[in-house]
Length: 382
Ligand code: KIV
Ligand code: ZN
Image 1 (cartoon, protein in one colour):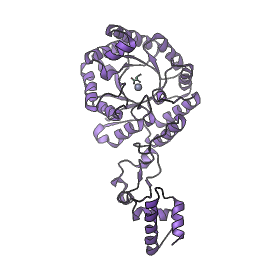
Image 2 (cartoon, protein in one colour):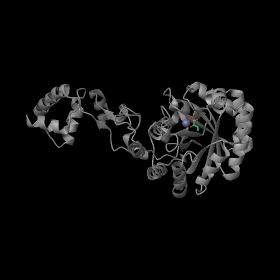
Image 3 (tube, protein in one colour):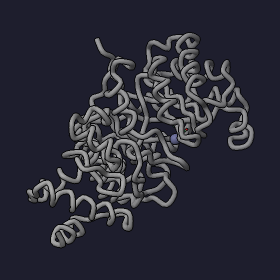
Image 4 (cartoon, protein in one colour):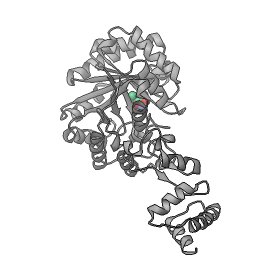
């Protein structure tokens, strides 16, 4: 049977930590509803102890969104965990996600705690969270820069205390695919009782490797991927949901797994998140950029018009677009130009078509964007 990969969407938590982004309750609810339509398994709704606003957002989502698991983030502190539970308790499927840093650099400079103290804290706080909430996820922050043996020990303690999901964050986007895959494999081989829990991954994109690292983790046994729409998140962001999902789907021959995402909702979701966060999607962004299914070069346009699979590995319809777009510019050829004229309702004889094409090429040499108006004008001149 094909293995299912759980999609844990953190657009409303890590995604909202994108510099200069802040969402109101209404906006978060709109996005949460759309994430449910998209079919994500888990929605990380916020960090209830961070502010009253965040608390109210998590509470509203817990009350109003049924289906996906609703998650609230909490430091490994009683007050944070309690606040998370108070916000989450209205949900049918609540989960507390608690974390503490485990790398030497974070423990020394940020926490000012010894390994021993951190280990005790992991046990006590996971146990406390589990007393309140039926599902608990634990993250050793900065896992990829944590001493391996200590990391295994920390994860064992979290399992002993009742964690259901262990998330392995590449907090600073430092790891590379083979190393991260190896880390997940090492965890599976060395942590006692690891089969009792789900292994999750959470990758940041500081080196542009968040998606590649997450996919390497899937190949080594990770079952939950934390990601954000349009790759939003702290600094360079998180692994992009749309890229993870479409890679798993397009290369199912290699990954041999599936997700429950309704991929035709991907573009809608991306547009909504971009509009409400005010963060524009770059034109050449994979899957959701406006150029992702656009062709300008004549050779490509000809190929796509004959058989789209020549230059498209996914259909535009599969992500919620109606069709590929043919951009008319100086690299375009006769095929796309003629097709465009037909779509505009023109039926020219060969002579007129030749003349129109020469005029179009001359205009495209002078101007970057040729609009339908420009084309109408040049046809009137012949
Ligand atoms: O990047 C990170 O380490 C996090 C954790 C809180 C999971 O966002
Ligand atoms: Zn993060």
